[in-house]
Length: 387
Image (tube, rainbow, N blue to C red; front, side, top):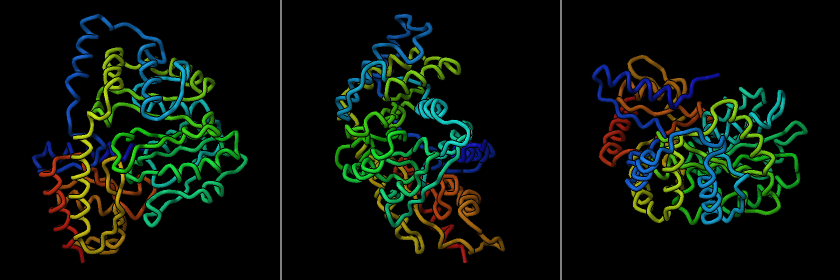
């Protein structure tokens, strides 16, 4: 198993900062906002009321009811409580599903660019990742034809995200319907739709793949509270799935970790019950930061960008700089480029190779405008030194 590239770069940034270097880290997908006070108040109330014991493995009943209500309100998805499993972060939710479904030799379709952990989770289950490449020219989204061409008799699962980490791309309702038209032809195919960035969406209202009745039973919808509600450290993700899959995930989880933290569960109820309109100011801030980063990147000759419609990442194509050098060192690819920017510009980014695209790098703009302005200034100066 490989170490997560995002975590590795974050660790390297902390080490350099500890040495006294002025490193700006744009490597982690973590909002720089604080958890809203009403959520923290719910956690304090839970502790004061002694919700500190073991809970049911898939989560408290009232938490799962809150998730059911959230799916209905925000996504027009109708689940029952026994179709919900809450886990220690959406990462565990995904792992539970993969471990429940994938056996040795089963194929798992993963559109690229992809979130770094998808591949490693599939490898742990002894599945075979089947990568379907979607380039910047197609806004990093696969086509129905690409999906159908990747399906074989060994295909068990597909994993994708919308809004996407690392690209910020968002599949429209029409694009999801076209993918569903392929999925419905293969009733044994299960699709994990990772929608953790649902609320950080600059288009019209988020749409879920499971909204289409003809594929509803084939879709596992993944979500959580880390991104929208700035609760990364609280660790709670959840699934909506068929009863069979939910039951299997609960069984797997029961042997690994049991339920997520009881206090986090009670805090999550407060977040899920809240009006998502409360997030508008945060979303507006992220949109402004996106424009700042895009404008800065587009001022650098050789950088190619698309316009990400969600999440808080830009995923520029920087292949123009491959083969260029500085002080006698030739940059062979995105790995070399990110290390060059770390050492020369003191800006920590993540190589696109970790996400399945060797031509790109990932920039997280979950930072203040002041920090982003300085980071982009440093990046531009460093790139212009290459010859």
